[in-house]
Image (cartoon, rainbow, N blue to C red; front, side, top):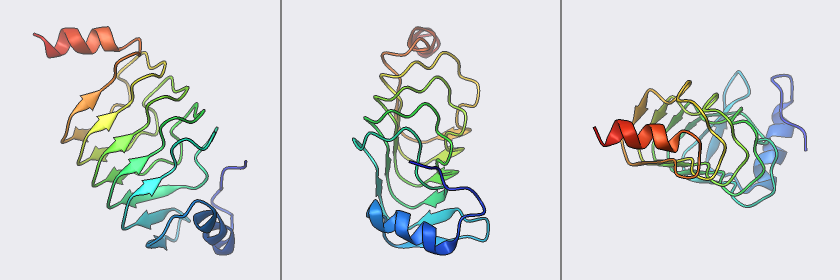
Amino acid sequence: MKYLRLFESFEDIKEICKKYDIRNYSINPDRSIDVDEDVNLHNLGLEKLPIKFNKVNGYFYCRNNKLTSLEGSPVEVNGGFFCSDNNLTSFEYAPKIIRGSFSCSDNNIKTFEYFPSFVKGEFWCTYNPIYKVWRLFRDT
């Protein structure tokens, strides 16, 4: 599956949204999309996110795939962001603002570099190399 680039047409973006049942969205001039409900991309065998997201006014589910990067993730999520059970090694491209919970468990994340600047809800990172560091920090 190809990842949409900035030069893809609006029609291509609409087709991708239809394929993945993404509704109530608007396309921005930079070809990213804003979505006014949940985005459910979990358990689809994705190696890359199929489209570039900007803001999601719901939950964003991309867990249980084969993602190696969060490139294309929303910049801002007004619900939770769930990317557990992938092949991620970094928080690079993770949303900057998550107004709900954040779950990244069962990946291979080793550092807090690129961690979101704001997470309002709970944070889960078990079964990652950083989990031990997080527990030490949390328990002090």
